[in-house]
Amino acid sequence: MILDEFDRLGAKPRRGIADTIKSLSDGAVAATIVVVGVSDSVDQLIIEHQSVSRAIKQIQMPRMIPDEIREIMIAGLAQLEMDATDDALDRVVLTAQGLPHYTHLVGLHASRVAIDQKELEVTLPMVDAAIKGAIEDAQQSIRVAYHEAIRSARKDNLFSDVLLACALAQTDELGYFAAQDVREPINKITGRAYDIPSFAQHLNDFSESKRGNILYKTGVSRRFRFRFSDPLMQPFVIMNGIVAGKIPENYQKPIPRNGLGF
Image (cartoon, rainbow, N blue to C red):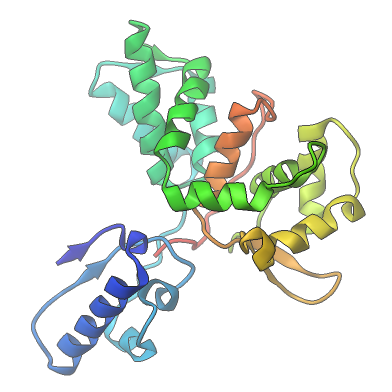
């Protein structure tokens, strides 16, 4: 039995499945259950029964590298006898952040835009237009969490810019970044020279309940490191940045192979 997109289930059904897995294991039942979902760890994915981990063989799935994301796009478009320009593929790579879910979502909308325009080649403007549709099709929980994180009564607030800079920051192999990694992308986004004290409190706020804990913080004072609590949030933030015109067309962000999905 294969249970795909397991992370999209609510807590109650996930606990029920954890109970089932433990019962099958305790009874030595000849059954194989494959649980597929996005999470930082198997314990977080399953929720209950830490002991159930003994009955699970964990297979860590690293994020895809840029060439693999491009292959998904190229192969999908080839079935429609279509192709894409290099800069369009680069934009999809930046948007997807190594996650095939967003590659398929953006690719679907981009191909529809091209067909509506009676073109057989997907271009950069088509991908950017497609991202608007992809945002609308994103999970409701992701959309709500994003708006909860950036809300502010002040029009000149930096919350959306700082969060976008976090999404574009260079990370280590586990997806963590430091405050200093945010400085370069936020300066590119805003065209202004911000230093760490200008946005350090924003990072702390994103790591607290008042901003929905959109970031997870670890470490000690002056050496804190951050990463997105939900890996699917990072591409969503980038898509909103593209729609808002805050990301230069030639912006490139290296994507490390890391273990944010199981």
